[in-house]
Amino acid sequence: QVQLVESGGALVQPGGSLRLSCIASGINFSTHTLGWYRQAPGKERELVASMTGSTGTIYADSVKGRFTFSRDTARNTLYLQMNSLKPDDTAVYYCNAQRMWPPRTSWGQGTQVTVST
Picture 1 (cartoon, rainbow, N blue to C red):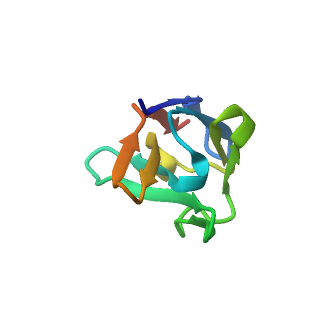
Picture 2: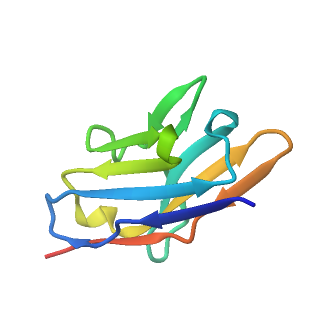
């Protein structure tokens, strides 16, 4: 059974930093595309960063140079280090794992990040 559990969301001031974590179970990192998505109020869910073994890591233009996506295979954990946070980064952040074959997409429950004074 696949399970993704995010944590680390919080209220932070503009310019601050947060690190999100996603503990994964039932997933082989090497056979999945791993990702962080976010959804702001009234907006569609959007890709923040994704990682595969063959293509490396890609980032949304809005977070390039500020966010870093990493993984610890031994701990089955994904991380999203977020620096220089802006109010526009306010959203619920979701961990995602996609298996190509047989197709399967798994989501975590989300963690709230609020950037505000």
